[in-house]
Amino acid sequence: MNQSLLPVKEIRIRVFRAPDDPVTCLKFIEGHRKVLSIYGIENITTNTEDWMFRHSIFVIVVESLDQEKLYGGARIQVADGIHPLPIEEATGKMDPKIYEIVRQRAKAGAAELSGLWNSKEVAGFGIGSLFPSRVAVALATQIGVNTFFTLCSPTTVRFKDWMGGKILTDVGINGTFYYPKIDLLATALYQEDMFDLPITHPREREKIMYLRENPEHIANEKSPFKDHYINIHYALNLGNIDPKEFHLNYAPFAPQDKNEPL
Image (tube, rainbow, N blue to C red; front, side, top):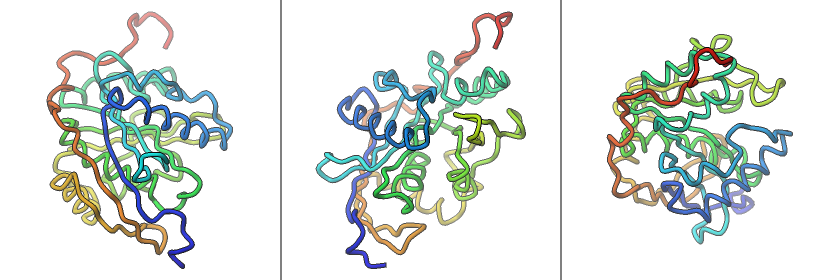
């Protein structure tokens, strides 16, 4: 493939706590909504602006070097004992077991990777999907998260074997739900032991460990799906953060009245 014909040759992948950059959060929301609308999805539970004000949300953006253009991104929402994780909101009424699963995992830090999207111009290159997923796993040590949850589409569920994810068979129908629409299948995944990554594919584990050791660097990366190289400016240092901030000794979100319908 002629690299000169491809639209993007240099990007930055940057991370920040949501309230620290409201302008970029709004760009993220706008870009995500455009992608969802292509698939006729308008009522996804996290498709709101509420999350941009929460200190338990960390944002990963794939952007141009001048920060004017967003090509994609993802959110890490940490269980904070106040706000339900997206997987709890999406599946709790269908299968309330998810509340206890999250509660137990949150004792050592639990989070969810959600809102993963990429613009049409970089679709198929892994720029807005695999690279942010890899960065999310790398950030686990900074944030102090030992378990990741996610709801994957049929397209992104393939990453589980690379990242070390497992299907959460305890909920839904062997871990699957029709979400966010009756004709779209989502798979509930979880990844544990985020610090050591014992079952992550060796290639991915090496890349993730390098990102942890070198959060600020420039790398010439090859797309996993295309014969295309791109310069990525990584800006992954969250700064002053306590890795035990979200180790909860109390229950995260759960229905307040067990007699009420779930």
